[in-house]
Image 1 (cartoon, rainbow, N blue to C red):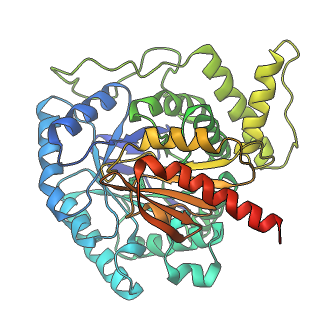
Image 2 (cartoon, helix red, strand yellow):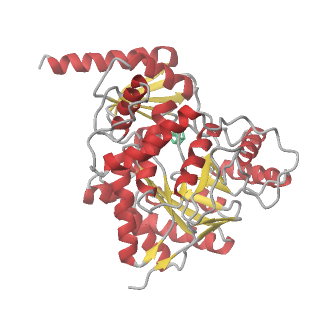
Length: 449
Ligand code: SF4
């Protein structure tokens, strides 16, 4: 069968030509126009080649339009990506305004046929304005239509993506990137592998946006991201990456640049050991001073190298354990070994945390809440705890978490056991303790059975 490999163009950025494009997302509120413009300019200056901004509803469409106008006025041509959940109307309204729109078409409508109609309508608008599309499906947010057939599995993710890919091709629309993110590295790597194979069999191969969603923060978030992303990129799959950390988005970029550097296939690379390169045709004027986004320290570099070297081998089951050079500090070697084995889901030495990066939908101090939950649950093992930034997507995106801490805003939190809310509207200052008490009483009830 003839194979069509499609290149995607979002503004001045080409995705799919072999270089791994680096992107990230603002965590400001979209109605905070000044704050979002400033963050976009900082992210672009720090090396983000695409910047995503959440658009929760139609009321925010004029806000992203104004953000784009001011970003261009500042001389920065970084393409903007509107991040849409659920509302087809908002996606359609954003398509003429930005360079790329990220959607999950399955969430456009509860009725699957109506979701298809809305997706077709959306594609026509994107075609008219030359807007690129990301079909972004996450492990936790697949619709019932697909999970009833395939379960909540990597196959379900790949099959769901193929339905929308086929529709795009039938509508003669090829400016499409696809992502299949999961927090579980085994699920995520398998989903990308299956999708790549399915696209090749179909004869239309679209660029893939690769990421481990809700990876958490600190060393664990970086290692988990590298284990998952490196496993996909080292197989020759993937064209653009986002490293999702529950930290300021600037902090993601050195890790994303490192991965781009390592796995770009056309010789054009970032230099992760030198100051960030700004990929712009017109250098921005009057930019705020770039923040120190933390160029990689030698310790961090060792950590990323080890995660990229061993993560793919562990996930492919080529090895069962990790060895480090004898001259390496034994405590550091043991720590890295534990972290990488856990990121590859081969051995769990501490609770598994899922935490979203936060975005314009987050209405509370997610980073502080995540640190508090980690500190208070560090003694627990064999549990998966999710800390999520919003009630709109958080509960759906927690995927296979045993427990969820979901911020509602207004200093209130809901606590979930699996997908079931056990406590709602708990004051923020009590929420972490109430979560720990619930987990401990659940464990002792199970032990006494
Ligand atoms: S779950 Fe987190 S990243 Fe996703 S929409 Fe909600 S706040 Fe934003």
